[in-house]
Length: 132
Image (tube, rainbow, N blue to C red; front, side, top):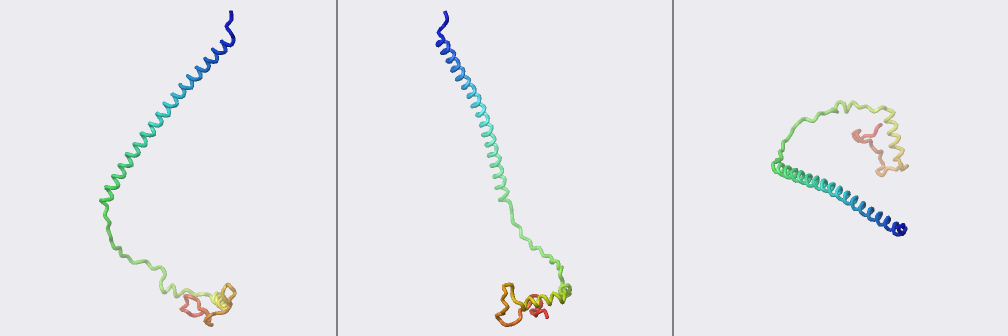
């Protein structure tokens, strides 16, 4: 006599269910153990870094108290590259003088040709004189 097919299907389904649950638990335990070892490694590295940081802070604080400030006056002559002789030898060409005078007499860049004081503006750096 053959067993009832529903009984066989129930036994098969129960076996699959028990096998699936046990496989899940085994895999879950494996990954939990792996994760736990990774966490332990991370915690050990963190503790080592904290110890190193504490050592560095202690070393720096001890060196900070031993540091002293020293003041010295260093007197040297500053080299002069432009002498008064080379500065007076600077000649402005006549065409540049003419263009600058025309610019002064024509007014500023806004088109204003009036001068508040009524006098001709002077070019700076030429002892206050115009370029005539």
